[in-house]
Amino acid sequence: MAGLGQKLEARQGQGLVMTPQLQQAIKLLQLNNIELAEFVEAELERNPLLERDDRPDPGDEPDRAEAAAKSSDELSFDAPGKADEALDADKEAMYSDSASDMAGGAGEASGHWTGAGSGGSFEGGGDYDAAANTSRAKTLHEHLHDQLAELPLTPADRMIAAHLIDLAEDDGYMRADLGETAERLGVTRAEVEALLDRLQQFEPAGVMARDLPECLALQLREKDRLDPAMAALVDNLLLLAKHDYPALKSVCGVDGEDLDDMIAELRRLTPKPGLAFGADNTRAVEPDVSVRERPDGSWAVELNTETLPRVLVNNRYAAQISRGARSEADKTFITECSQNASWLVKSLDQRARTILKVSSEIVRQQDAFLAKGVAWLRPLNLKTVADAVGMHESTVSRVTSNKYVATPRGLFELKYFFTSSIASADGGEAYSAEAVRFRIKAMIQSETAEEVLSDDAIVDRLLSDGIEIARRTVAKYREAMNIPSSVQRRRMMKRAG
Image 1 (cartoon, rainbow, N blue to C red):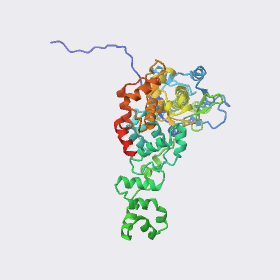
Image 2 (image 1 turned 60 degrees about the horizontal axis):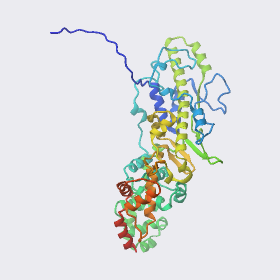
Image 3 (image 1 turned 120 degrees about the horizontal axis):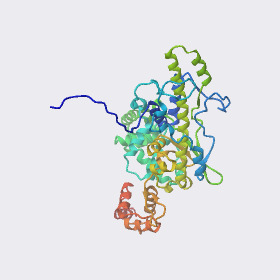
Image 4 (image 1 turned 135 degrees about the vertical axis):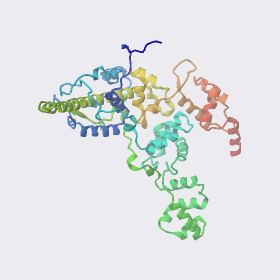
């Protein structure tokens, strides 16, 4: 029988060390500007060495750290060399897979990062709890976007629908002008109205209505109670407000008892369905990046500095209290505060540079959409952008999630610009699947009773335009848009005629 014993072995290996600082840096990259401002406010209250920089020029005093977010320089999408040069510094240095530059003993309280210590995280040590840091009540817009994800739509229609959801107000109403929205997106008003009609079927009932009568009608339709009499009552709410019951009985064609029952049922409805999610949970959408057209036709990409928090480290105060510290506990506290403040300033600066760099590349890739509309979206994925800017796909994914860009065509989340592709017949540039679906839809909408296009005919037309696509793919796209087959469409046109 072999004897039992102990022995000591040394093994060498590589691994990703997720320090509290690295975890916080990743968290900062995921936050939008409003959430970031709330996070920085909490840090300002917690850290005595960190202070808000409200000066117009953060470089007036040499002993203060530079402000976190600098975005006064504009980047044009058609000058990639200049953009890369302006943003090449500290190329994701904080996202390194090595923690050697974050470890070590306590240093002087001078603002230089020398170690994490026991309180290396911004929130003061302990294990990182991702759920505790990110969980919050779902907003109305998030609730609607979750339902949109389950709706079978083309990418172009999905972008339009997502844009309409973002235009919805806190009470659940969609009061934006549909004509102006359609013009900005480069589509027809009828297409926008058709998508709005589908969004109005979402929960809570009555959401995405354009006015109170439509909101009440949607709720009654959901209950299967929108009969002609009730519809007439909803259309004459002004008479109800004036208590003109004789006129209401006349227009609704009911007697007094029925009218009382109808009014009671109307009062049980919800006039503002969006408020069920709570006003405190609804967050305003502020653009993180803005895009504007230059006189020469190029696009300037800028950070929204109005919502970016600017903080600095008061090194003079840090040195002063460091000299007066007597106990080891006081010295450790001062060192940790200095380290955390310096790390936050560096993280904010890197976050701003990363967002601007990724946004500039997306604008460079999708300039045709900005110039011509949603039908001109180009195929784009995370890998393409990540390779172009020299970052990891996961970093690009974090940057584009929950970040919004203000463009001449409206406010969009950055992730909306990623679409799949269809090969070009001549081997040239690929086409966005969204743009191909848009073309198919346009072809079918322009059909006449004498000329209804079969899927094969659509394939031939697309091929003549240089787009190579299989018949089964056309059928799949058509079915996803809820468009009947050519045989069914021909029958429908004959009945309508």
